[in-house]
Every structure is written in structure tokens, then in C-alpha cells.
Image 1 (cartoon, rainbow, N blue to C red):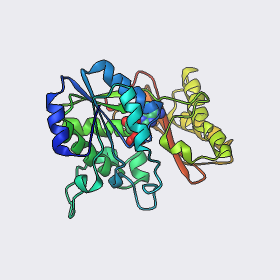
Image 2 (image 1 turned 120 degrees about the vertical axis):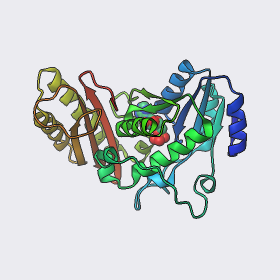
Image 3 (image 1 turned 45 degrees about the vertical axis):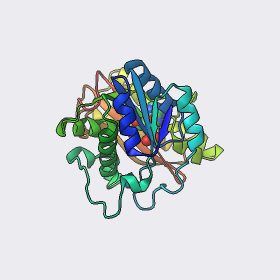
Length: 283
Ligand code: AMP
């Protein structure tokens, strides 16, 4: 496995690797969710690339950029075990040189859900992902459904800017009790970790209600809120029943939907989601 901080070395390595090349972008502190994407990339591509970069531009003021967990050596060991061919670990100064002022901005769909609560977040995401696509020139790029809106936004960006890359989506990998794996789960103390299972309970209970025939958007939203209200340590930021293609909040009778929520447990902000019906993120 080649590990480099250098853009020139990355480019020359990628230009020589057998195609198709699959890319898995990450912020590191890897868990099974990340590794499932690496395995999907391995299956679909002749060569696999990964990036590890905690992207300051996607964190808002007062968010956890400084405290975000990092363990470069362990991450590299795990990626090597998975048979990754090349890993890029760029320095912040390389991606954001002095006087940096060029951004990629996707309009409407970044203003909803996560974007409404984390202003500037998606501008950071789309800018860094554009940089990664320029640097690696991958044929395929793998993202997790865990960050469902990110998938929708990146698919929009790829179409709008004609990036020659196919966006593949991996399912959410969960702990045995249902909690979606996340590098941020390490922030939770034991009581909070237990309380955090309420996100999965709220979503699965709502999926059951849908499976039993409920199609009213407001009723599904209410179900999620009711389950969240049973957990005193959970402070919901939003619950959403949205169109999986446009992310517009649905009203009245629906067919397919993206159920999603953001919940504070103490200082930690967690997100999770499930799709109902025959839906695909980003259409
Ligand atoms: P991150 O390091 O948090 O930026 O995540 C890197 C990639 O892994 C993103 O595409 C995430 O959506 C994906 N990911 C994070 N957690 C999970 C999970 N539990 N299951 C599947 N994919 C995930």
C-alpha cells in the first residue's frame, strides 16, 4: 500500500493503477462502516484508493473539529489489511492554501435537513470532495447511506459539474443494538451510549408503522418524535420525512420517503436515517 501526503506522488500512483479505480473518502478513525465501503470498492474496482482528511471546512464554529478523534497509524493498518492500493493523507495547508477563496456550492438541496442546522457544512463537503475527485480521478466513489443528504448533494454536484465518476452508496453498518456506527460514538459515556439506541428505535418503529400501511407523512413524523420523547437523555434537533430525490419535506400521502433525524445526546450530535418504499437517494 502506498501512503502519501504528496499530490504529485498520488497523481503518478493513480495514473499507473489498473482501472477502474474506486475511491473511499474518509475523515479517519475508521470503523466497520468505512471498511464496508472499502470492501464494496474492492469488489467493484480493479484498484482501491482511500483518503484520510479531517476537513476543517465542513465543521462550523463551535463544532468538534479540534476534538474529532484521530488515529492515523491504526487507520493505515486497517486499510492495508483490506488491500487498499493507495491512501492520501494530505496536510491542511495543501488543500486550503493561504488566501484560499474558491468554493463549490450546491444550492437548494444543501439548505434543508443537515444544511439547515449546520450552515456552511455542505459547502465544505462539496469543495473537498471536488478536490479529491480532481486529485484521484477515480472511476467510482463510495459513500455511506449514513450521511444520506451528503449522497444526494454529491450526486447533484457530479451531474451538474460533469465529473466522470459513478457514485455508489453503501448501506448503514450498525452496532448489534442498532446504533449506526460513527466515529463520534466514542464521545458517549455509558449512559449516553445506551440512550443513543433511541435513534434506531425511532426509525425502525416508524418503518414498521409504514409497513402496516400508514402513508401519512405527519403520522410518520409523529411516530419518530413519540419514540424519541421516551428517552430523557435525547434532545431531538429535527425529525424529517422527506422526498429521497429532492429532500423536500413531504406532506399528505406519500409513496417513498427518507426518514431522518438528528438528536443531541449530551454534547454529542448523532444522525441516522432509513428509506421506506422503493426509493433511491438523489433519484
Ligand atoms: P466520515 O469519515 O464520517 O466522513 O465517513 C466516511 C464515509 O463513511 C462517508 O461516506 C460516510 O457516510 C460513511 N459511513 C460513516 N459511517 C457509516 C456507517 N455506519 N455505515 C456505512 N457508512 C458509513
